[in-house]
Image (cartoon, rainbow, N blue to C red):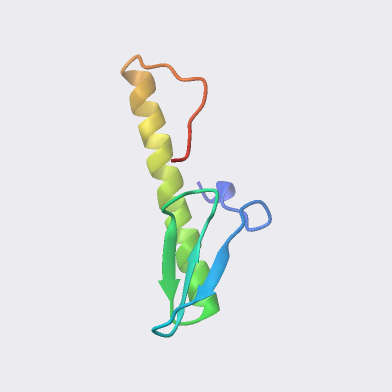
Length: 77
């Protein structure tokens, strides 16, 4: 799964948090976000969250196929 996360292909947006630290998101994956005390920690946490999101999306797609609900595309929503 690590090959699917490549920061040259996936845009990560990092914001300063009002409470201190940072929070980041992957706009292509709604709901995929994380936080960290530093930009580097936030980036690493967002990448880990994206791996989890991709894993969940893949699992949902496989379950639909196994259940006979064939789909031509998987929508990230």
